Amino acid sequence: MGHMTIGSKSTRRLLTLALAAFGAAAFWALSFPLPFLFGPMFACLVAALLGAPLVGVGQVSVGMRTILGVAVGASFTPEVVERLPQMAASVAIIPLYIVVIGLIGVPFFRKVYKFDWVTSWYAAMPGGLQDMVIFGQEAGGDVRALSLIHATRVLIIVTVAPVILTQGFGVTLDNPIGAPAAELPVHELILMVAAALIGWKGGERIGLFGASILGPMLLTGVLSLADLIHFRPPAEAILAAQFFIGLGIGIGYVGVTLYELRRDVVAGIFFVLLLAVLAAIFTEVVVLLGLARPVEGFLAFAPGGQAEMTVLAIIVGADLGYVIVHHLTRVILVILGAPVAARVFRVKDRNEETDG
Image (cartoon, rainbow, N blue to C red; front, side):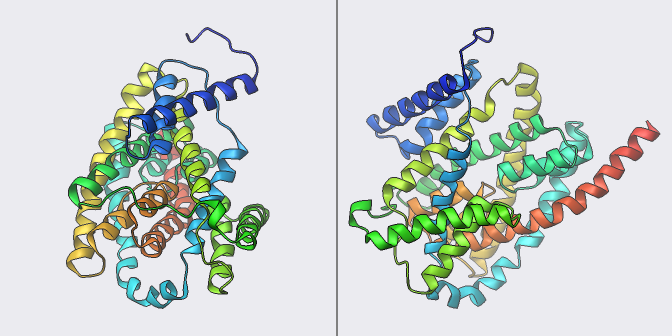
């Protein structure tokens, strides 16, 4: 099927959306968990592996992340802010967590899979999928390998985490994700849309990393603390965000070769297993120290992307404030530390080339 050419980009985009919609409908009809996330993800994943010419939906996908930003921002209530000092002890464990991941992950990719140091560093860092790929590209890493390794990490975590949550922690995945749009006050909906767009575009203008999530989150947080927003985005919006996140993970595998499957995807799978063990240890530590309940501890240290973990935290009714403060801390530390470390590794790569 690889040699078949399907016309324009818009035709391929329609094909991708149709497949994703089919997946969502099928999962919903079969009463599978999270049909709007897993349906599109698996439909696009299978089609991509079979060689279908799928293509992303560009800015629409980015725009959908603003919904999650608003959802998180709306959870920043005065109560959450009052609890920040209590969270400090468990947030303080995050830098140690990142160091341990680096000490295990970087040598794993470098020595076992023979990636260069820059690629190994960005493959090991548990930041957001897009952030790590973009930074890795700027630092001169192997973009394709990074995309596949991170897509595999997110795919496995998004698939396995709900199983761990339901089987291991006994929570259900049917927590109401938000009120239907029809039940929300119109002026709050307008404020949410404004916060999403201004936060996203304003964030990009000032060069804020992860602007599509962080910009809307910060603005909505301010509106929530100012007592102007009292609800999360409507259920329909959060389902739409899940749909495009699922689609995005699935199409990460478009055009994958057998060699890439053998090397990059398998490396990603093994690394996720390593990360899972680390995450379990750190979760156990914060729970034993009485810093978090098991579900929150698990979600706060799970090495998934911020968007995906937000969705899971909403669905299981976890303390969104706690989970997100930890993910934000991790992402900010990774993003601030990444370019510095990458510079060191780039020198290392050059020295090895000269020695070699």
